[in-house]
Image (cartoon, rainbow, N blue to C red; front, side):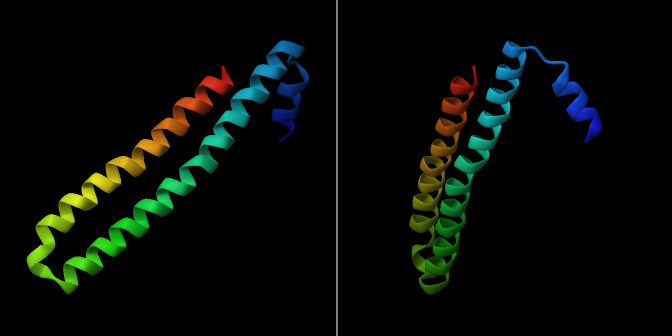
Length: 88
């Protein structure tokens, strides 16, 4: 911890601002990834439940599940791009 505080003490005003922006962007993306993670978990769980209840519809459920995963993952990628742009 002392090494980190010594490193921060050596930063100038602009470098300190850039370091704060980078760490804030990383933290914000971590928070933004929570939603898609929960969404994908819920989606896959319900899809497995649907396939267990109606095995004959498993192909259609699986296709719809993969589309839902792709759209949910797109939210995480959009969050990643937005927070990287904010950090710059």
